[in-house]
Image (tube, rainbow, N blue to C red):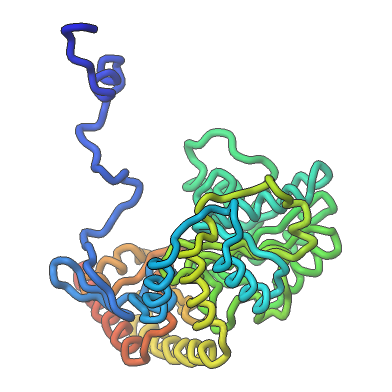
Length: 415
């Protein structure tokens, strides 16, 4: 009203009897962030604004596939950035077509849809399965411990309380089974199942790998019942396990595959790869994205593909993985009181800790020792270095883990 000062939204809420927090940061506090900020990175190393230097064994959670500031990616980004960034999917995008063709040539897929993230890829994967299944196939099967992103569809698929609590009624139709329990999977399958969603290796779930042969059995049962096999290779794909995608190790192909993280090498990019049959219901207007597949992202993604999708590069990943696994095995033997097992494939590895040990505490101790690692569920510490890391850097990282373990034992009195 005239002559009165307008109330702020916070004041209005307070007047209505709703208590307000004393303050909130400009960045919404949905993460418990470490007190370190980085100024620059090169290869496997990050320099903090306060002068500290860190060896990166997390790679932005398996994103910085070729390390920080890789010359090939920087060149691709600069060259495309000087030409064209964005036009929208209302038009033909040559860079998008080239990256799609590279993915189709290298995989099972007939067609690709580009997204900006793994969560967006998961959402489209869910839509494809439900559209494919229609009213006659209302069920989708997923697995306990899964992580497919944080959209409402993705958290409904994963089903974990820590992801779904507080969000009300979620998308129906998902059933979660014990990870790797093939007897439970066979019993749950039926002709009313539209799709089966599975990570060949669970990342957030604790570097848990499906038992050998499980993917082949899943493929056979999906074929028997006419369901789509949807693989989430967002974290384990793009060469991280020593093959371009983890399912190649089992000699099977999915109907749909979710890809993100490493495909952009640090630039936001994701993709859904599909067979012609699986993608048939996805006609014009059934899905879209304003930014997905923009020229800038696809130019970087193509540079990643041209680097990673070669046998010499993948052979190097396998050699480095064998070296790191050997060094971690020796570390586990030296700290048998703290480390229960080394798990994982390729350069997607985890240290599962014994009861009473917390991966978050070990990650903090490692950071104090100048090493960045990533906690996960199931008492597991994730080790996800860039695929370009050198063996001497792998050795240095394991040495810093050893330092962190000794420091944590001294703090807790377990030394």
